[in-house]
Image 1 (cartoon, one colour):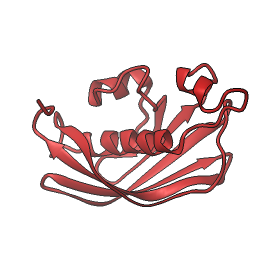
Image 2 (tube, rainbow, N blue to C red):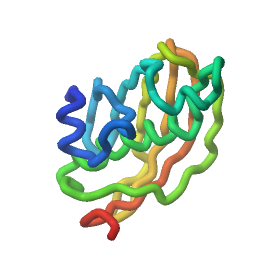
Image 3 (tube, one colour):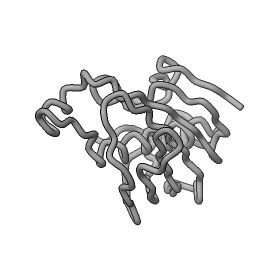
Image 4 (cartoon, rainbow, N blue to C red):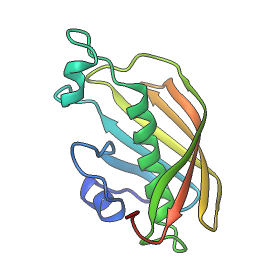
Length: 147
């Protein structure tokens, strides 16, 4: 079991505020499985427009948060350290519940494949134990950021 704080996460992936959606990694088995957490604070700029007076977390941002946890999982594996992850596919995603400010996203990533330059994971996001998002994410691993 390995835990990482926000500063350690930023040493692994390039994401920064306002586009870093992982506060901590609670459990990590590099290249196999990861459990990340992100608290919806309520002061995020995008909540003001989605939707005024009735803030709802966009599903696409929950998918992105899951991808960031997947990137931490992949890029901590010794074969992939120092690489850069980019989306290659999003499949079979289902949104199961509304997520609002104050909710805590628990994102669990289980690696299906991580070989060569391609990875595929099953992502499950829950809030208070209830399913919020499920899907399969595919990503490419690059030697350096795209130009």
